[in-house]
Amino acid sequence: MNYEEYKKLEKERIERALAFMEKGVEFADINTAYIGEDVEIGAGTYIGPCVTLEGKTVIGENCRIYQNTRICDSTIDNDVEIQSSVILESSVGDGSKIGPFAYMRPNSHVGKECKIGDFVEIKNSNFGDGSKSAHLTYIGDADVGTGVNLGCGIVFVNYDGNEKHRTEVGNDAFIGCNTNLISPVRVGDGAYIAAGSTITKSVPDDALGIAREKQTNIDGWAAKRGLYRKNRK
Image (cartoon, rainbow, N blue to C red):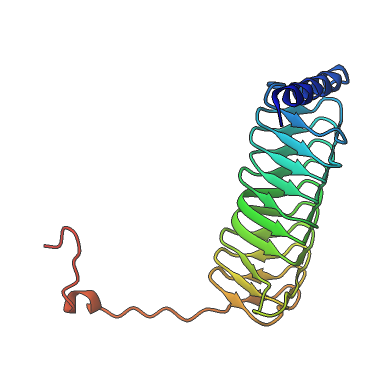
């Protein structure tokens, strides 16, 4: 690209942002917002600095798209808040909150009033209305129901080395922290999974699934081996 081509594209980009402003879109800085020519943005939406909207992306009304966010070929409904995240070929329902540092890979569909929090990755999955995954979780090839709570450090183990498999989590289920769901399994409606479990068999509705070794403490084990402990007397 030569200088003249760059100046032409820059002029078109600024004109596009100004046209959105006339329709009620607010920009923190039109000089750092990169909006593709096929993008649609609803009135009352705020676009922060260093935001990139590409392809056939549609942003609804009264959204907050904060800094360092990239959205490509995706549909974002009304009243959605997105912070420093990447969304590719996916959709987000009304009133949901995404990020910071979330990654929505293609064919992911988040419902209304959901939370996809920091360092959560979702791929080829459906995430039901009112469900939450606050942090540090991988949701791959899954169908998650409504009102589900995923704790910290949940992994949907969807790949067996040859094929991908799906996991289903029913409505109002609760998945405790540091749980592995080995696909294909189903966690039933209203079921609970105890923290630290590796689930290899389906859990019935309203049941508690526990899959972890019973803790054993061996007194004096470290001391007998002369292992260092700070401030030992």
